[in-house]
Image: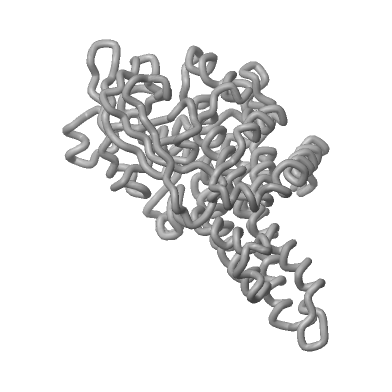
Length: 402
């Protein structure tokens, strides 16, 4: 068992960290206050190879492995959650799903331009009345000749007003919809330019304000059969396999947020004095910092284990979900303690911990809430849930078939 990162991984960490320090850190407070980000950031992430990080070189990607994806997400969220969200939805939820389930024509049409940043992609499952309850979606697609007519609304979609391609899920069997039988759901690649697609941005979010989140309306959208991903009624399996990838990126990103809280807290504890001594010499302050150290190391080991399993082509739903649950809870605890440690200053935007506190909450909810993760782990322990082989894993690194 080797815990040492290779030179390729260390170079990636250093590259992303240097870019974040130069390009994002000086401006993130302004972007957060403005509630938007500069589109040039997407091009720069593409130029760094991030948008196609683990897509193979034949499709314009960098051909790196899942460990690289986790490390990149950790570094990105160290600067702000919105950066990691871009990678989560564009690469983790969309591109890697096309790489797994798409046919050759779909891979050629979408993977290469998405890896290069020529097309920006996202994932559209959640609806106004359906989040963790994926079978509760209402969007419906009716087959008519060589097209499906798509109607419905998606909600809380990252990059809704930015993305060009939406990996979308809809019922295609009305009887199975009535019975809540998930085998009636189908996956589609819907393009913004298709008539009947409209989006809007959601304002007033608690956190991740620099990122774009919105809703998508499909009003009699004609989606060609060739834009169906996988076979008809495979949509639920495709959605869950995508979430296995997305949860991994969320776990790694939340780990980066813990590290950001730790670094900010250590810095402040060394600079600030109370009762005649540096803040860091007080025992209860040390306890907060020690908790951050413990949780950072544990969260990092959990996501790296999941990444290793992904590289080996092993089913990892339980391990990835556990990494996501632990890291997100750890980030919420770290952000709360960081604000507390900063005192009144932590309650203002003069220090970054106020933003960390607002940003951390989203990940505890999306891609399977904390409660869903608890039930999942209990079901595995009780033998009520077992891993089943599905066509949801990419080959071991290098991803020659991606």
